[in-house]
Length: 78
Image 1 (cartoon, rainbow, N blue to C red):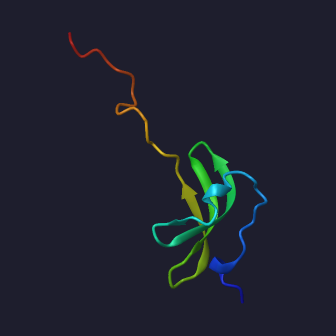
Image 2 (cartoon, rainbow, N blue to C red; image 1 turned 60 degrees about the vertical axis):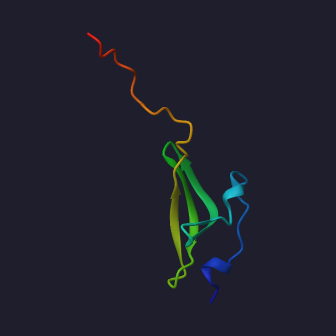
């Protein structure tokens, strides 16, 4: 039986493959981009813990550079 974390990484998506093979939280190895939407990307991954099972991993966009206050400024003087 093939181990999920040893399986080859598919390049069929052709997009954002720089994340392919990345391990998150020391446990979840990203294998293939499954989909993308307004709230991030969903990847086929492998739980590299003792469980060694396929999982879905949601990768959220970075908030680096985002405004400290996401709401429009309000004049509070007055």
